[in-house]
Image 1 (cartoon, one colour):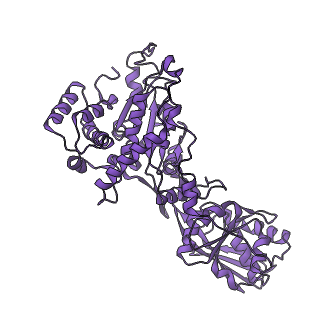
Image 2: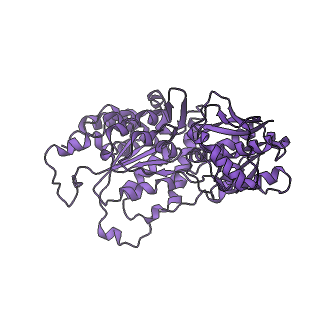
Image 3: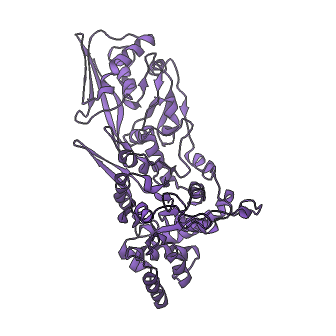
Length: 512
């Protein structure tokens, strides 16, 4: 008897419907076809044990399982449950009539219990698009799937429950999640706050500008000056995720298996902080079975690279294209996948190996030329993609001990949201542009016009400070964001002057 069940394979952040065909006939062998990987081939032992332990009969006949379309590689253990249900239906132990209405996915343990899967959200979206009535999946993943409208999500704990459901001897409880309520409930739920930071008003101002224009930023300062503390609080002043961004971010984390069972929807912007020993594949994504890397997990959020010069050169260089294109394409011989990677890069570094170059109180003990060599670990093309260079100085004791209340994140965020709304209107006719940082040189010339006095100021600054040509566009972009924060239609002299101040690493002799 031939029976079909339905599941899915995830490629990139999208899913593809897979038909699991099971045919039982005279004979004794078990065949698995349809380009399965080792994890799928090994399903026979898990399926057979789960069926027997759950009190059902594993047929001692010839069983052929085909995963169609047969020219696409099937990976992972999540096909165990639809294969088991297909075998039970083909052997007449459960009726096959309703199987065509459901997506079924889950990994089976030897005792019949069901383990969680990856990519439940994109699979649920695919099931809904293909017109399936419901999705039966592990209980740990059911809240992810339940946020998809017009799709019934059933969370199950073991094989016996699924069999009882199709035999009409047990009713499964549908899990419902109110997407909008879930989204609004935790939208402002952040552990950190800028109110915790004493002093550092100039750094807070720089991060506010970075958040308002979507600019990448590098913090340069001695150990203990508060670089990491400030970077951790940046997501709290970014505009809240909208519903589409939240769904897109949740899909990536679902595919990577990073969502907790209690999470239905990611409502706060991601903050990723990989260690400097990370490999280039772990950062941009890939591997034998491609998975999203750190830059994709930081999509719509912040990627913080602490001690930037300590990262391997190759790791930093692979980021150059994703920083420009805001996506990463991973190509293999048989297929290629694409992951979104629109993130804000925040980097921090010591000014020299000992950490005390330019320190107001401590002396640098590095040998001549060592500081320049240390800074040269960061390539020009990567530095070119960072708009704000901010020098962080240590906070003195009187400020640390002060009981004076500092500004809360939600007050700063209000100003950032207002500036982003101005940019939304400015780029309303461009789907690919959302903030000032994404402007092309052509757009900069059009949007960032300055007066004759401003041109003279910029010319003088570039000559006296020895700023490089690449700094020109960056200064204009940042000045436009500062003007937006001030609700100014034109870029004034004070906006330009403040923007010029954020190009520390471009100055001649900064490390000389």
